[in-house]
Amino acid sequence: MDDGPFEAVLVDQIELTETSQYFELSEGGKLILENRNDTLSPIISLIEHGKVKWTLDTDTRNTEGYESTRIWKISNLQITNSTNPINLRFTGHWTYGAEQGSMEIDREDGDNRFCLSW
Image 1 (spheres, rainbow, N blue to C red):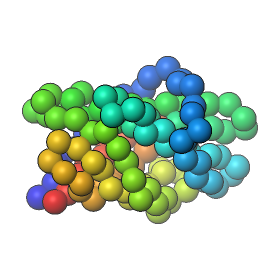
Image 2: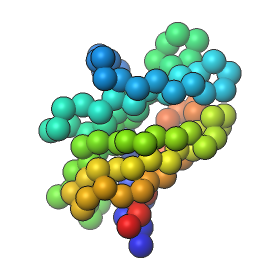
Image 3: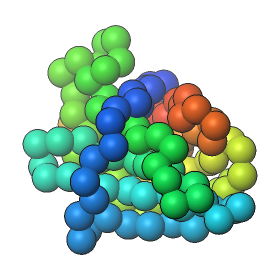
């Protein structure tokens, strides 16, 4: 059974910390995962040509029917497609435990969908 699809929302660029994880993409791009403190949801950013193209907040509460849920960590991130769309596999730590997740992101504008499965 799948939970979702969720949609991460575009937000302003955040300040990165020492715990930020960097992943190489095609064409010199970099994907950055920032697991913020335990009261905030993870952030995913795309950097191209030295500039942040978009930043996404993965808060599951933004999805109708999931307003009482919360995701606080993404781990074991793997990039399964580094071009367009960007495809990710990961473990999402959220209200119902640690579950396998997948996400597809449009590299141009950050439009996305993600699901968590148990």
